[in-house]
Length: 86
Image (cartoon, rainbow, N blue to C red; front, side, top):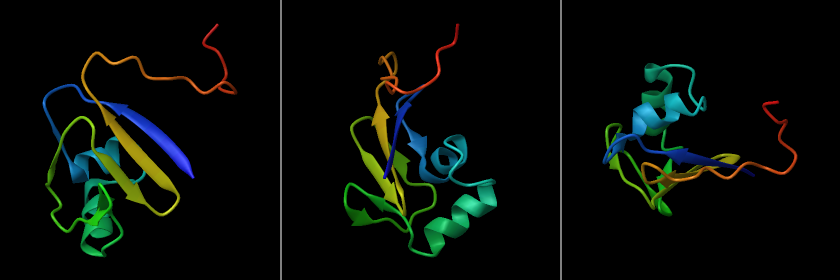
């Protein structure tokens, strides 16, 4: 399962924007469709609100991926096998 750390820029992000920002949905419409189809869970519970406000500490789950929301200014961990920016 892919785990995606996502640093917030403000107090919250809406679910549809998060799915698009992480690349798990190719468009806003695609993100809304994923939510409407019941494919998304937030903190282990089914989420049907496309514009649910998500805050730091919450975890969004869908098939094959989990997004962990981090507060602004967090250091996002880099995977050991990730290529360096050198």
